[in-house]
Image (cartoon, rainbow, N blue to C red; front, side, top):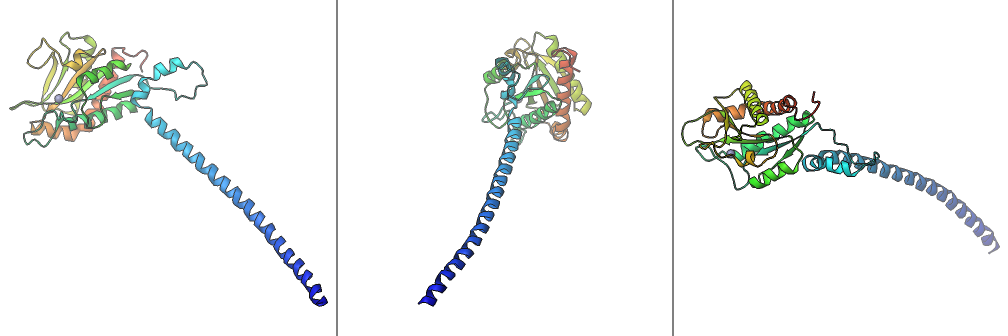
Length: 279
Ligand SMILES: [Zn+2]
């Protein structure tokens, strides 16, 4: 028994010693683990912050930027966290038709004007943005937007130019590009239309159908988007949906047409001094 007693505490201390060493290691391991976890959490939160920052930049398009001037006037503090709107000026791009309103179609009824309008409008938006121009789109997807709403979007913005993009319809043989302006022939609107037409001709069109005033078939009335928008505006007809050559020209040159329209818009804003000190 004595021997056992002598032995037992000894075992106990040995065990204790063993445990002590283990706990030390566990504590060190835990400390290392905590440091590692804290590091990972910090890294993830930094990454999420960076991604969120990039997204909020993307989202600061159209509507947000449209209100940018109103917002900035409300925030007089220079240390405002709101992103600064550095765009030179604002333009409204109106992709014609949309949703249940398909616009005109080709003779087979498989090609819809609304799709061509949106396709070229998005490219115009891209090119204008690359020139540091703020762009407000009346639609960015296949949805129906009333003409009233299109005009309201334009008039609620601080846009200096409004351009409506369409493709033409004629139940017979007709081809070429034409641009429509209000029948009072406002100088800035007419200059805008002529600049766009000239730029499109540079790219290549089947026929120059000119700058026209009023409404097709009736010069005493106007397209609503020209009549009810408060800024220089025009309506562009990018070739006839029923003409094979015009459709091919549109498909081959869609990107170049869009670039030409964007450059013509910028040129007009500068030439007509719609924006001060534009270089
Ligand atoms: Zn149309």
